[in-house]
Length: 327
Image (tube, rainbow, N blue to C red; front, side, top):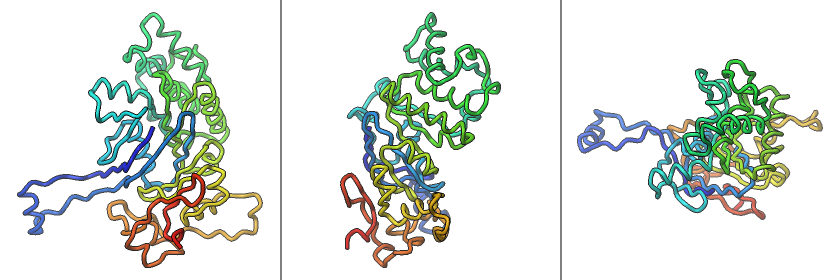
């Protein structure tokens, strides 16, 4: 899967001649546009786990929903197995989109409370012709067992399960249509720490068994370090750094990445002085010019306020968007 120059803007509208005239006269306000994702490039190899990290509001969930086909991009392209869903007819898009499924953050809100578990897990596969009525129960049982649940519970309703069990139901539902990539949007954030570890181990087991790829979205750097092969750091809609996991945790380059990693609790950092990131993340309704991070950056130069830095290689497979790298 790959994405090029992917952007998402909410609130855009194209006014007609009358609307433009009213705006010029000051009788109508221009649309308030939220710049959620701004020109992101992304590549995900077969069997790879890519961790996507950033503060709340940075656009990582919006990016994940575009990759999963739940949101249409405002601009840019997504390719799955070398094909763009936008270039296909409805049936072709649907078949291609089955390859990417999503596991949501809230296991309470993401399941229909009126449906039994067998319907929740198996209905998508039935509608897509992956299983017939005769094999439905066995197919659902296999998906539940794969997700670590007792198949005998398939006649129950979501409210009869714990949070961890509900998240496993969500995973079984995603697996039922035989995807190649799972977009996990804060998939363990709502779970207790002990349950988090079990679900993370399940993800890794499924990767080994099925050859799955993951786009793992999280604000928890400890979880990302544990599960990911590669990490991308987002700030206010843009990717500011990307590198293999060990590289980015040992040698973070971008000032924002350095600040994020400095906040991770360490056993050997008892006497270390904690320095918080200055200020608040700016509004995506009016992102700063130049480098979006420059109002909070301790190393900001005059150039940073006017010229957006581009991602450039600073080491093998290590990209960073910072003017400091240009000497």
